[in-house]
Amino acid sequence: MVGLSAGEKHFIQGGIAQDLRTDGRKRLTYRPLHVETGVIPQANGSARVRLGGTDVIASVKAELGKPSSSQLDKGRVNIYVDCSPTAAPMFEGRGGEELSTELSGALQHCLLGGKSGAGAGINLSSLVVVEGKVCWDLYIDGLVISSDGNLLDALGAAIKAALTNTGIPKVQVADGAAGDEQPEVDISDEEYLQFDTSGVPVIVTLTKVGRHYIVDATLQEESQMSSAVSVSVSRQGRICGLIKRGGAGLDPSVILDMISVAKHVSEQLMNKLDSEISAAEACEEES
Image 1 (cartoon, helix red, strand yellow):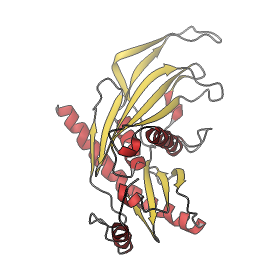
Image 2 (tube, rainbow, N blue to C red):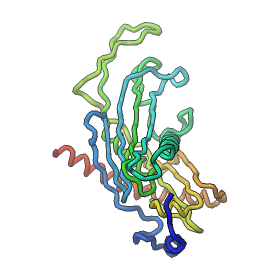
Image 3 (cartoon, rainbow, N blue to C red):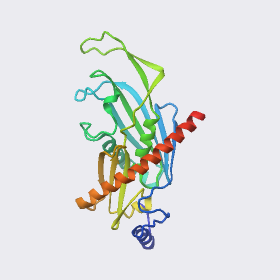
Image 4 (spheres, one colour):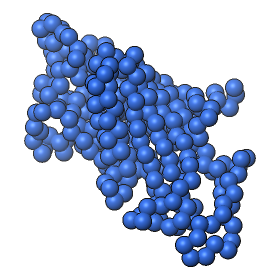
């Protein structure tokens, strides 16, 4: 927890009420966003995102597997987040484990929709090689290096950037496999297919402090929140997932307004992230 004096709490809350936060931002303004891609050479794709003082890495590893019996026409995506104990004192011991589990579940919900795959921002059907027999399993790992608030949005941006950076090896399937036999496959070491991220959403978290809500809350601002709503929004403006945190209830009309604001803010975040990813990939190619 962040220890603040009564004066500091009043200063934070008063600034948000007047649309002038302690770092000079308005309520709906993000901190500077910086992206690096290809930071983990042995992964199929990776990216590092810095959002103010929050610093996270996401990596993607692709492995061939077999589709589940309930979803023969889909591949699988597994998301796991690790909170480094050096990132913040609260990550030491069980605190870090609990937050890792919470973030992993939230990202799974925001990016992959329900258990049926409905509302998924990642196209699981694109991961199928042979329906019912061979598919790609993607293992997405997130690492929190430094935390100064808004971890979910930063991790969501890092995953989107890492998936944009991901190359899936081209697979040749041998003919002749009959019935339930697993077909023989040849995985190319040279040819890769770019992963389609056109439907992958960004996550916008609106944090309610007093009567107002803000985006990209710092750790100090989060300590003053009554509740927060995270909305994952695709480039097409489609809502892929929604999560609420905090004990205070919200009126349905407030939630609808927050969703509307999140959709508007997501356009700016998406454009900024696209620009940063393009610049990062250009730097990666030059080096």
